[in-house]
Amino acid sequence: MLSQKQIRQWIPDAVSAFQSVMPPISKPYPIIQIASSATLNKVRSHLVEQTKSQNRNIKNPYTSMMEMLYGHSGTAILIYQKLCPESKDEFNHALWHELGHFYAISAETESFFLLADQKTNENQIRQSGYWLWNEFIAECISNHVGKEINSSLIENTDYNCQLYWRQTYLRLQYLIQLAYNILPYSFSEYDLAIYYATLLTDPYTVTFVNNAINNELTVWDPNKESYIPMRPDSIEPTALSLLPKEYVNLLLDITDLLRDKVEEIEFWKVDESFLDRLGLIVNELNIKKSMQQLLKMQK
Image (cartoon, rainbow, N blue to C red; front, side, top):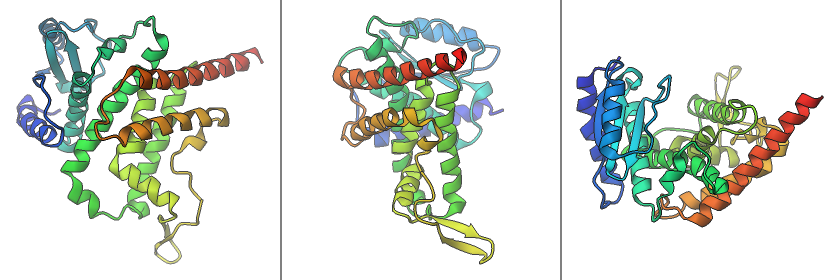
């Protein structure tokens, strides 16, 4: 388990890297505190009171390696030592994700973050859109920061080679299947968000998908003991084809909507119209899955 001393040493560099990439913002950056298993409830309760966060109830079991608390009196990030990544790269990505939450919420012209409450809001369509957007944009910002900080490493690696793209492809497969399978009557907005953020903004994944579309991937040939060009169209890089075909068009609609968003200069800014369009598609997706499951139960 990572020591609190090491965590405290990593925090300033991660925050500094984030601030070097993202444009300045008027709101003060969150306070960051570390909790152990023994101090988790006490530290979290203190941060909830300090920020006046509405997210008062703690999950049981507590499964968050980091948590961003946002309220009318400020923001805070709780780092849970027990689950904290021991790799510096993974630690940075996780902290940038939480800072991404802070940054996107701070840029909201309206208080959409209130929709993050798990209690169903009267505007259920917009809330469904925000549940996906909230995690999607935090992960996109983290990917964006990582891409800028690690640009030389990314540029100097041959991601056409199966040695590198295979794990990327397997992760996409895992994420979309998790989004579909983890809940019986709906898609998981959280896991869909991470899937789409990975598909559209993770630099390794974006390179893999583009190379697959352009038939530039190579695979290992044991007979020739070398990497050779992959047969054209032998892979569906988005992994959406793993799901039942009745969902694919709706999932592609979400892809198009989110792709257009991340291509904007200030891609982290959102409005009611966007959330409503996203929420409508998510709702249609969930209704379709719910109906399919009920039909299966009746057979």
